[in-house]
Image (cartoon, one colour):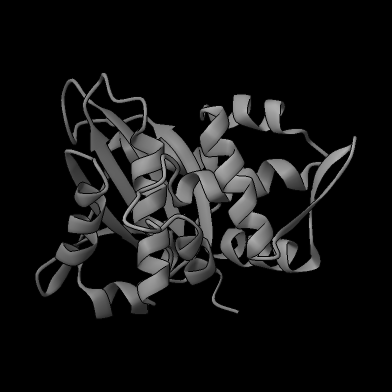
Length: 210
């Protein structure tokens, strides 16, 4: 199952109208619904979306056969929905905001880990993945690779150099890293409240291309 493609298709424009939700909201909705039955008002509140956008998102999730709704208890994941969510979470770890160390000043940084994505990184190339993060709305991006012995490396052209910024310590506290993992870090304006959304959207786009 190509979970990233399924997630991406839910958030694409239809009839030339772009929805107010992104792949980030699709994944978050599946995660929230997976915790138990939930009604639309509560889901809307947790996703920070408008009522119309939440209705559209739920409609598309039903059309993709990822959820089913019951009155009055709310919405739950289907078997397909659970499989899609599991595949995404097996490949993508959302870390949220992280300490940015010395990589930028007057900014906020958010990160995700793509599990066992070293080959994907080499095939797509660092600059293309970095551009994906910026295209999603970040001001800049940093791409890191977990090498042998758990060393954090920064790919530069045809080589990989050790990366020891304090950012690494914060990431290690949030997740157990494995050799071959790829870390995407979005650098955003301090006033940007959607930094995590930007980097998650980029990560799903990377998985979709994989």
